Amino acid sequence: MARRTIRVDIVSDVVCPWCFIGYRQLQRALEIADLEGDIRWHPFELNPDMPPEGEDVAEHIARKYGATPEQMAATRQQMQRIAEPLGIDFASRSDRIWNSFAAHQLLHWARESGRQTDLQLKLFEAYFTQGQNIGDEAVLLDAVDAVGLNRAEAAAVLADGRFAGPVRALEARWAEMGITGVPAMILAERGLVVGAQEPERLAIGLGRMAAAQE
Image (cartoon, rainbow, N blue to C red; front, side, top):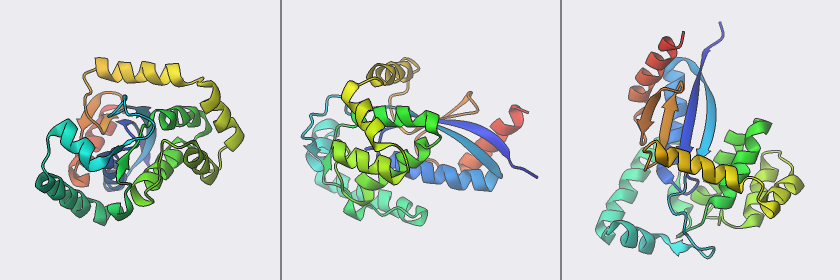
């Protein structure tokens, strides 16, 4: 018997470690709930004014959130403790945070191909586990190549900015809905879950939403 399918819209940023963790938790939760996920990714920029040269991660977090080195170390330890059982190793994460707007344009373009999730995961891996600059066009195009999408078409998308307007419009829409942090997951177009969640807890919500749409 085929699994029931539930739509999950994920508002996220490529440079958000909790978004990577949250997706892996969602995968586990779908398995627990015996559901298939119809996953759709939506843009959110944690740092829309980030310059092309990026910023040192520690300096950025200290400036933006007022975090001390001790607080940052504690957060990193907590994050790694949650990430390791999910198969994520942040050890090679870039020590800089980069502008993600170009990445979001490519993700928007990739939706119609059915490879959007593949590209999203490849970008997460490039930044968080390979330490690459996901604001660099060559890195982005290598990711496109790796998931079987057309490199030349992707380069044209970045060159002419055809999806810049739609991405900005979607970002504005989520802001109008009151989403100020990511990941934010909309289950079956009605239930909002914000932040990374324990798979068992998320599975309960998924099951309830799936049952309600029948």
